[in-house]
Length: 278
Ligand SMILES: NC(=O)c1ccc[n+]([C@@H]2O[C@H](COP(=O)([O-])OP(=O)(O)OC[C@H]3O[C@@H](n4cnc5c(N)ncnc54)[C@H](O)[C@@H]3O)[C@@H](O)[C@H]2O)c1
Image 1 (cartoon, helix red, strand yellow):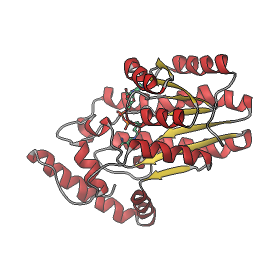
Image 2: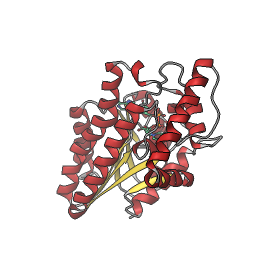
Image 3: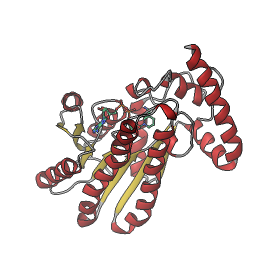
């Protein structure tokens, strides 16, 4: 597959991984519609690469459909749909409000559903296309204090793999992207109680620095070219994923110990050490 001239939509394109995906797509010759609930941030991403942008809230199914329709009306097709927008809540689950639960369901799960519901029928009609859903390692493993996020990302992984198995016969590819910590603003967002996301994610992975978003975007385009089902990055995250499947009981015990360490650090206002389960 070549990306030259391909029509793509990216959600959550105003920051982090979404912005990096837009840069990688533009560099590979694709025409990208950069979208984000923060319209100005989407415009900044688009301006830097000479692309178009739109304010788009993925919780608004009608608006997501309108974005797909606009690209199809203009270009005659939509080749690539990147359902990437997402949020996180980190901290003890009893502290989450129902509004926070609903927000993560609406953005991380329904947002992806809206992208698929809008793009997939069009891709079936044209006989080709690729859907790329950004999940997370949290969609493959289950770390405590990230319960709502883990729930939402498991939903995205399950949906993507199931869709992939029925979409192939219609000419449509599906990739789910499952990175562990990537250096983006999300590492410092969504803290509930004394949770310190950056410490949690980096310590949990046993790394000092998070993966680079532009590298992940590059990896993602390669995975689309190879029609891979799941992209796990960085390499060490593969080992954690394998470990979680081979020794789920041990993984659960490590997760409990890690959460206890994190909680102690959060109570003390410091950060807890020790590698976690990822
Ligand atoms: N950075 C990481 O460590 C990491 C790891 C695994 C998975 N992810 C996933 O990658 C995706 C992108 O996250 P990121 O790290 O770039 O974070 P980010 O916070 O830098 O970017 C997320 C973008 O999504 C946008 N957004 C939020 N709500 C939206 C909505 N309702 N409609 C449209 N846009 C909305 C935000 O405005 C922001 O621009 C998310 O799905 C996240 O869960 C991130």
